[in-house]
Length: 329
Image 1 (cartoon, rainbow, N blue to C red):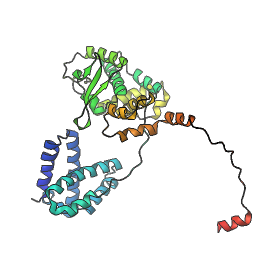
Image 2 (image 1 turned 90 degrees about the horizontal axis):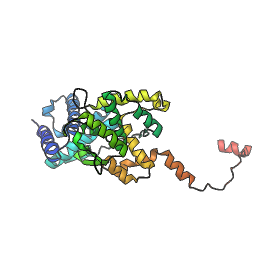
Image 3 (image 1 turned 120 degrees about the vertical axis):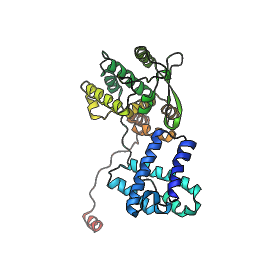
């Protein structure tokens, strides 16, 4: 067995699980990346994965693997960069364990992430949000559950995993009403609730009648809702709402769109971006800047406060025919 195999095993058991206490999602993502990489390297070098050495995974092979992800597996640039981040994490760990492979490791770590065009942030206007919240049939149990879930997601900006992970005991409806969740990086976050959200959640909790540790939004059989289930429910209600608010038909409504909507509503209310970053649980405040770029209303207000330059429009005058001939040469 080569040096790579025990190093990779220690990376997961010691680094990710024991030291960083990485979430199951992070461990699964890193596992899938390295499994794909080892299979690709094994085929390229005609070596069994357990016999691969660190020097076998040099920069040219890693570059070929990234190209393989894009062109043969049809992965997007974001996925490619996420795979590269997992590989970098492994090689940074290996650099401290095996300085004799420093040259190979440094060349891999020098592989840059690929730049990509950032998609326009999709969010709901107030009429669109009202139509979506009115779409669930509140004459049914699932309709009342979905209405409470949509309202909570649009008001708090919780991620889909945070919504599905909420327990009944995470909702506090007394003085200083708030929702408590565990976000990315196992960070605890508390988000205040509005009076309207408190009233809806109080009604839902009374009907739910669950223990503090029970899921806030379960299926009919009592199991936790999956991310796919939430996306399906939101898409269903968005299609219903589009019959009343046609502009919704042009938008792909997902749980993250509700998160964007919460951020844009805060921005329109004049809340500072640093507070919005705390509200959403962003690791870096720069992440919140995307909402400033997406907000045309703020840009129009800034334009209205400027003084337009007092200059008359110019009049086109054709150039002299001889000079035009010379310039065209």
